[in-house]
Image 1: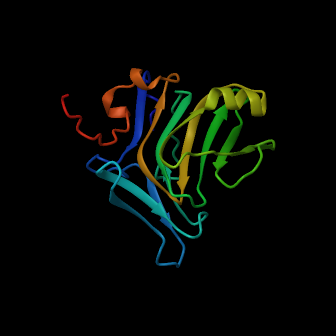
Image 2: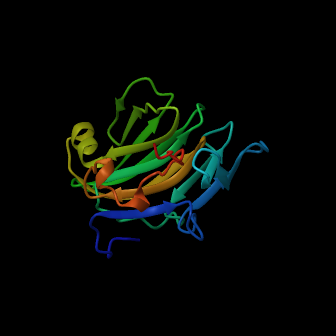
Image 3: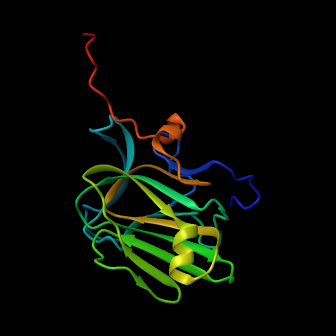
Length: 197
């Protein structure tokens, strides 16, 4: 999808304020439970539209990018960033990458997995999130080296499961400090107007 795109700095694959935020994503809600949904809602904390993914069954309710199963992202930027709200419910996401051994591997992070487990094609790891909004920075190059003793080449697919709210999902060429980020990549929380003293 992005293989022939010049990639440097930041590359966004989801922005909740966009006209069609899930345009390149496939939405799956297989659960028969009426509580399961993927929809755009306004978040009270940030007073802004976000994508909400909710279900009692996290495996059957998710969004995945790219939307076509036979396509891949082809993103070479090594840092994946999710701006996500913690619902204090089970939540997981996974990233499929290609390494320099030409092997497809999966990283799965979840807030209910107690320890990291590495198998030949998948690495599952615990995810600690603060209350409210979080910025999760996932260093794919570092994780690929440590888990599989190989080098990260590109990201093929990103899949985000219930239960969370998403503001933005993007890739970066390196880890950026908060004050280095362009304004559109930051999560702006409404601030109380300060009175001039």
